Image (tube, rainbow, N blue to C red; front, side, top):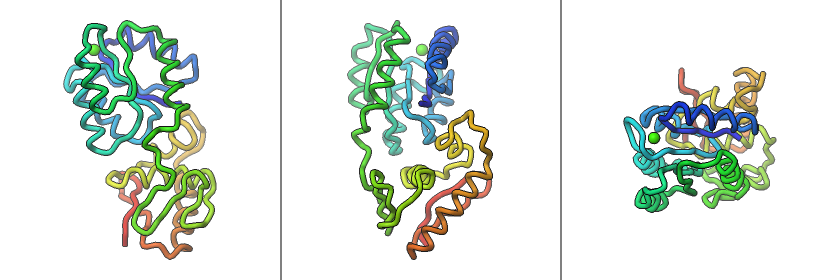
Length: 219
Ligand code: CA
């Protein structure tokens, strides 16, 4: 599991991250709202943990921005016990869970596990893009079977139609941030995926956006 943790209190963040890592949870940490938003828009995370009071942008602003941009990653909001209104706002704005500060890291881990075990409500079984229908569960694209890796890559591309997905993001998502695979792997699998798209006579192609990554386009 890989999470984004947006928290400006450094000592708290360090302590929490230490325990999360021991529990094999990979953590990217952002210490302010702007950096948090930049990272939250990337399709890298299984869960985003958002503190509410942050320098730059508040956790609530980050939450509503990412939901408006179509990011469906589960979000756990953090805030002080007495900020009941924030909790309500957070849940109204699309947070999936809420944890009052101070919290035990074990409690956070339990919530993270619960959120990643639960199939995301928004996860559609069939993802569509132009003439493509991708059946996530059966791993078939317009009836033809994809390998697990091809399916994971296609899922990232199809879920982020507006954004270019970088090689680095694909590498981290498919093989894990600590994997020894390099970006050539991404190129190889992308060529397999392109071949399958051509075989389907689809209007859709994977376009390489120089310096940024890949994106699905209708041609
Ligand atoms: Ca804070």
